[in-house]
Amino acid sequence: MTHSAQWQSLLKAWLSNEEALLCLPGPVDPGAIAAELTAIGIDAATVKLGVADDKANMMQAFQRDLNWPDWFGANWDALADLLMGAEDQGARPRVLFLCGWAAFAARAPDTAATLIEIIEDVSRDRHSLLVGAICCDCGNLP
Image 1: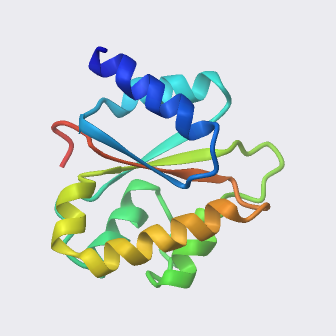
Image 2: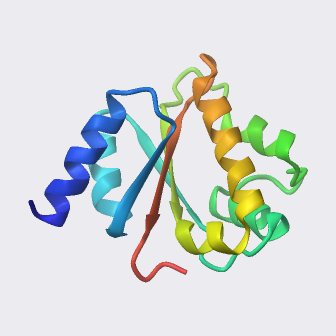
């Protein structure tokens, strides 16, 4: 199975279950996966965690990469609130790419575990637009 066929198969299986997290092996191209998601009505956003080594750096990465407002509180409750998604009726479901996940989780295991708990909780909420997160190595993205 080619690498592309492998992630396509894993993505399809993940979208058909209720798991909030998909960890893809090896480097992936988020653009190719995002195109697959877009074709089925799901938006994708990338958070680059490659240099984050603690909660503060992780929160900065979310704020920067998701273009969150200056008033973002950079705490767990604020993160959960913004991950829920827009209240706009036209907003589409969304998947997060957590690029540089393995390195981040190794540097900040407690913060990574809490982040996963929040993603799981938010994605289970029936009002949430968050489908879940794909943890991966996004090649040369920092």
